[in-house]
Length: 168
Image (tube, rainbow, N blue to C red; front, side, top):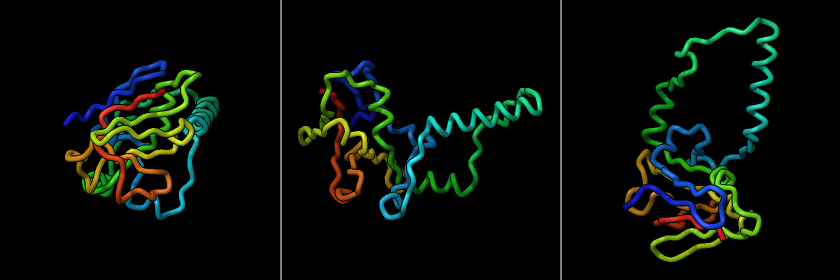
């Protein structure tokens, strides 16, 4: 089975998605609790702007310093490592769709699977979640991703065997 998912169709940028590296992405969602706990969506751009503003203010007050390389490396705590090895995770589809930049005339996203095609209007597709690991392991048998609805109503019967994503 191929673990790379081509992103094609009416998009500015034809992407390829590799779910095997998402385990290290800070945007990943813990699916063991995602559908049962209240969560607040963060605007990544606003978070970035706020962080840069704090950094700018600190430089003005204290002066610019060049940080050592080791301070910029991500270090994982023991519990975070254990969670990555045993957790069930997913990623929102919206950032990938936004990065591909659908053409102005595009109206739907089609997921090509072994059992046929599943299509969603673009606005609805943005809310989908790609499950990419189960109990710390990639979805090798029926993956590389499972497509979950934003309310988790299909968590027991997700869309599986995704081979390509096409924007029409």
